Length: 344
Image (tube, rainbow, N blue to C red; front, side, top):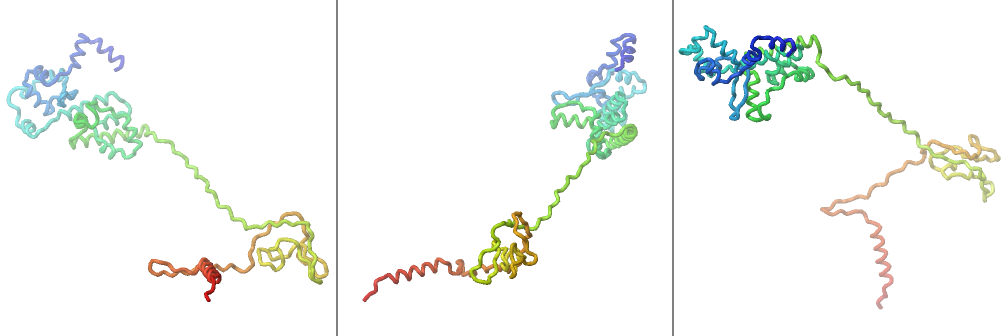
């Protein structure tokens, strides 16, 4: 409360007794005594919605105890237009509603408590949270489709009165009291919530998380496979060996695969080869100590894969081609036979 309101209440005549009388609450029995009517008639008037409760709680038997403002009861009893309700027979139309099982105490409390919550707030989002406090989560999700707005709205929803542990019968009963049940009441709250949300969106949007910029991770590109290479080292060893036969051309002293006419990865001019007149052949090169890398290219006869040994299936056993062990055993048998003494 503001300081000015407190000063105004203190300045009234008869303070603080007058303030205590204004905020005094009574139950059914004490309220009936205050209005000078039976407790049964008091309960019927409250069920018909003529007496609006201001508070409620659950006793140890999980029975709902409704509390009313004493000032409201005195005002109702002092009104001359309500005299036929306090004495005499209850009107026929009201008696039919009671027989149908009408009970407006919880609905009247929700309406009164909503007005109390709206008077305490000024911001549009807080007003929307107060209205949403009396709707079920399914109804709120149907109106507020945006999850960020729904999460922001739940921040301003007042906490329900603590009546027992979650999931207990007391908590279930408290939820039924604090949540709208009638179709017309739900429709009114839905329209009110939609209107207040439009006003709240026009003034301030619900906060949203900052958009994260996703940087794509660069993919590792496959490198090209280099050609296979063979490194050959040229040496300064004697380039030719003496030939035993007269007239034979000297042969270069190098790797066997580099000899002329040898099938292998290289079939080009060889280092240090000379012609018949003692000169170098065209395309030949001088021997050096520098390593040479040449592309590995095969120009020989392609390899022919050997055929696998044939296997013949005979029932559950396999008959394969004779193995070297069979030949070895045959030779051993012949050797033993040849060493036996001959019979005369």
